[in-house]
Length: 85
Image (cartoon, rainbow, N blue to C red; front, side, top):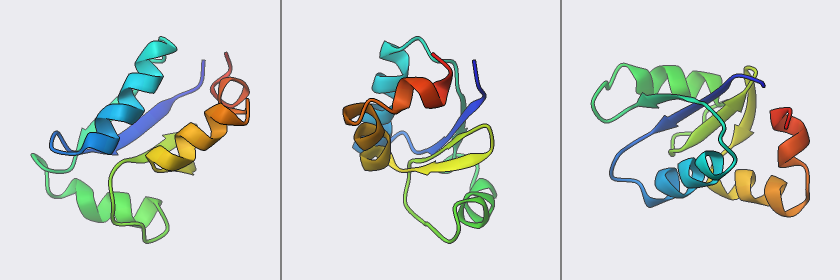
């Protein structure tokens, strides 16, 4: 399985939805909480090509994008192959 990282905030409904989708697929991920660790926000913005909203999701260091992008991949049948499932 590939490495999945998600920058998130506990106050973000889109973050919870993205994590629920990953959890439903039994995908392990590393979560970076930008609310409790503010120094992660500039790192996220840099890695996400300037995107400032959470979640920002990466698979093997490649930017997937946010929650809408993750669900779009799922609807298109492209998420499982991307995750190596």
